[in-house]
Length: 219
Image 1 (cartoon, rainbow, N blue to C red):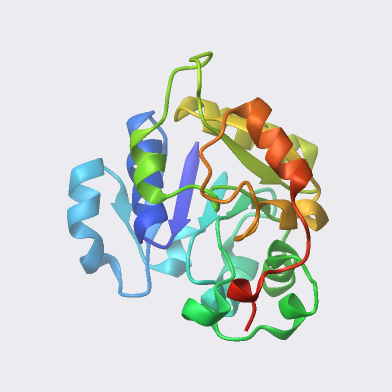
Image 2: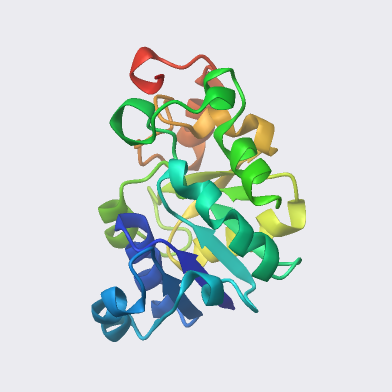
């Protein structure tokens, strides 16, 4: 598939490496421009792009940037991304650590529903619960005992099925959380966050989650 990645930080860099390794055609962009990505491009075979180009003609677009910066890319995604593209949201809300206060999220709107409202596009929430180093290093073959499962949420079942295939290709199982309005089950501070669980234990962790945010995860 043709995959565009917006953001080349820890998660974006890991996904660039993983997706190119299994044969996908990957382009990557960040806020600093293509020259800042030359080393990553050389190491992986991915193509460094400007943000407006990285979303064009793609099957999958990964948004992996600080949540507070999502509005800055909204027009690019809305104008340039194919209408059928799957948009993956890996973002987390870190109000005290990075993002500042985002009122609708503080008032109970799921983080990824807020992202959808900014982008004007539906998203699939995934890759937000795992540390980047674990994502890069802990993938295992299909059926391997103890294989890590990742939660994913979204309102389009067909898109979620394709993302599950992507996860399997790079060494991970999946647990379907439900629609985007259920994506709070995988947000920071929940039992699934950073836990590296197999499918059975991840399902239990997701069931135990509470929508109430702890004080560490509120402005």
